[in-house]
Image 1 (tube, each protein chain N blue to C red):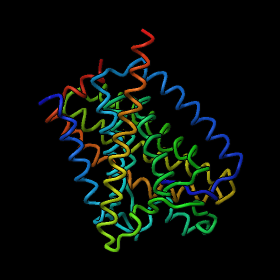
Image 2 (cartoon, each protein chain N blue to C red):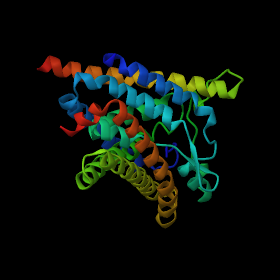
Image 3 (spheres, helix red, strand yellow):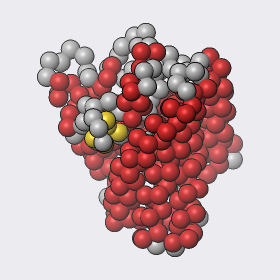
Image 4 (cartoon, each protein chain N blue to C red):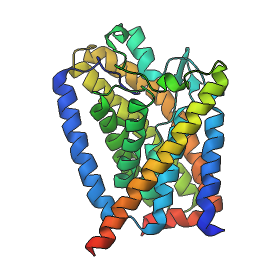
Length: 96
Length: 212
């Protein structure tokens, strides 16, 4: 049970990602300041798009597209950070 | 607070990129020394949680929203160096996959929301729990304060970078960024506190690990 605590925690993270369509769509703090102070126009879009603005491409229902983007990102980050931490501790064991 | 490309000049981009690259290098070394095998899954969980939580923009005053940074939570549970690594993973993925935060501005974003937020949160948490006691109450007050300070300081550094780059005058952008993020920081503080309550109730040993 205790060794699998992270499965429950990952399920909670995925549940949090599923709440994403409820998020406020107002500009965030930096965007608001950039707009008010007139330097928002300096911003440049990325030269390519993958899952731009947290909306999974090719899905008409926007809530679903947002949830899917959230789930993909949550799993990618779990894998990336887990893998990185595993590699770092592995290297330590080999050096020891 | 993800800075897009175009807001910062080359000198600022280069400086912040160099500092962040050095910070990540240091973080890999320090985490390698300190991280136990048992903490490996927690690294993954915190990165996943911070990514998901950052999608949840909450409204603050005047048609503006904010979202958590999450560095404070990571720094309290795993220490500042691990938090820098976790935040770097999140910010790199957000920039590469989700086009949130510029590619060239990645160094600045990692500096503000990774390095500044993690270390400020860690030391404020240490100070407050030392003053208020390492009990439940101290943990919550420390968590809230650390989270608020981390957002506020990150926004100050963000404003300094914008001003140095000539995007907006210092006297304008600094109070504007500090003002909005003083409010967003309250949200960060409440959410960090709520998660710490959950951790205390279910896995209090995670907080004990950090103390030793």
